[in-house]
View 1 (cartoon, rainbow over the protein chains, first blue to last red):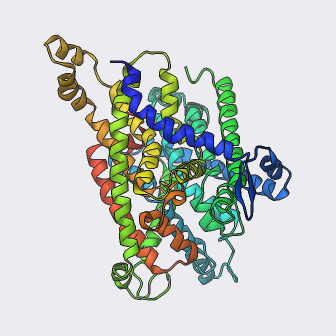
View 2: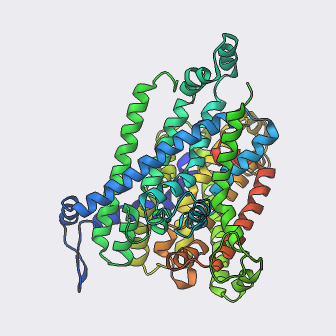
View 3: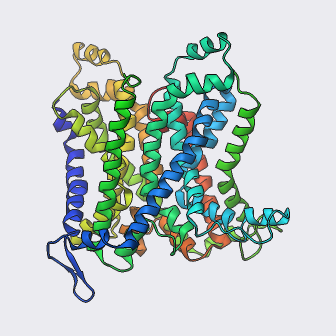
Length: 280
Length: 265
């Protein structure tokens, strides 16, 4: 049967419900907004010029990508060893650990963020515990800070990193480790010289997933960052549902989309050039 | 090579990190006080009874259940034929087709949210259940497609040829041979799609109205204003629901297979 005939229903849905709305948002970003008149059907680059010439928006974009970068680094540092240990566990410990690592992916981000709000607050679990132990005299502020957002987002994103690295490790030949062992290599040497290079494709693809999801995340920055610490996604939300300046919000969103796509394409280019051998 | 002491300590700390925020929500939900306290000084089910006095949470839960079911069903019905075409065809435009169907994973969800809002509001469909279900179907189709593709490519094409040579009609081949062979992928895809829709916030928050508010949106707007033990008890019920689904999936299909999207074990 003709493959396009089989795909036709899904194709129709994507045409009407994805391609058209995205094009409409792109067009919307060139319109104007009047406080009394609403959306005016003009056509110009003024929204983009507004965003690109305002320090306020630079700060928001800078913060968003800094948070995404920090989350990615943390996920690489803790996710890679976890995937490595997972690979070598006994079957039943592994199945429990898989539930613990991947299970939170199935719990709503809102619920997980609520948990972090309870942990990170000034009267929260962590601060109370540290003050009871006498390690702190006054609470260390973590709510409504970028640092708090990074910690909570790392929790949301790290399962993706573990999955990506683990998938890469499953493709490696266990004989390579045995060979290194038999030649007298220490554990740390084996990890650095044998395991890590083979896990690299997983780390790189996991980093890309974590970075792009973090850069566009909404729930966690919104709840942990509050009104003050804004990121791109929460700014778009405010423009659409509070200020009602849809054209400006659309322009910010399009810039985010383009930035994420450019980073993805560049990253893939660099990775393919650097690791041409690994992917064959 | 076995894991050493460092590996054990690391694994325990990692498990604590993963479970702490979820455990703490469950723990504080059992408080008898009117505010969040950890650990609760006295245990009570007071905040679980309080859910019954807040029908908007119950309504939102029901909306989310219905929405998850309808959108996952829609996504699965549309994706199975497309997955069969992409999974075994060698035709021009195959890669483009696959890239298109996976593209909702690449586009930031907030961009999808405003695009759906703009599109639906032009047709007066904003806030309707149908509009919500169709938008959810778009964003969960990539998850279904990956699992359907994994089972289609893992299937032996000669069994279909065998049934054709025995005189089966195309429909019989699909119903009696192809569909049973890809059922694990289809069921896995449906479940993952359901859960993704059930938990979805960023798109939904733009396109719900008060009567179609989903549970994540309801929880989000409540938490953004105040964190009381009520959100903890509602969250605990949602967690419990997820745990049940998760254990069933793990038994039937394997959680790692479901989330990696490959038939590797």
